[in-house]
Length: 240
Image (cartoon, rainbow, N blue to C red; front, side, top):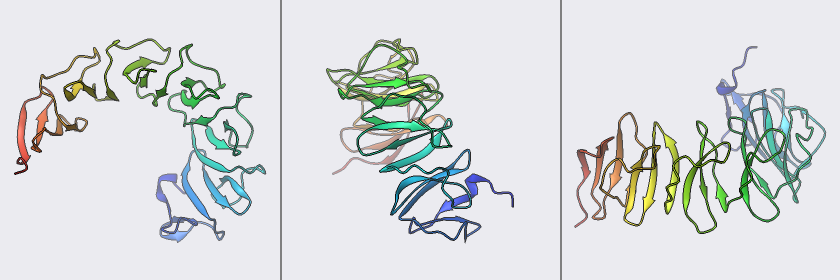
């Protein structure tokens, strides 16, 4: 039977997986997560957390406190004290141990060390750059948002170099060439030079979706703007 992983869903009670609305296997678990390439899913039962194959059988003998999905051939797990990544056969990907691990995206992963500092590592568990931060997000298209010790945010490349060296009170990753950013006046969209693409500031903004973004001003007016900041239409008038 040819099974595509994206056709497998988690049952409503999260105890097993379904394919064509039928149980994929006979076993039941305390909790299951989605399947990821190479065809493994994280599960939890009375013995602990681990990964299963499409038949519902364990992929390895080790057990953990928590296990997560495979990304770039690696899965984050924790034994309750330390976090690290394992291969599909259950082997450690590197000797380093961390206080927390994210998921690999494009060969890079967010981790937190024993000093509660965040940075990115490669598939060998080595830091991608020398700096450490109060927080770092995932890379998307080679760029990530980071927070320094003063609570300000900017963007970096995978080698740690600043993309624009502009700092904000809050910051999102780039989506279709624009990132959501908050300065002392409010939210706006910026380009990859760190420059606002329009002068107006908003209470709330969403990423651009095919040329338009939903925003809300300080009076509660919800509207759509285009990529130059021009208002396209009003979705909800101001709160009386």
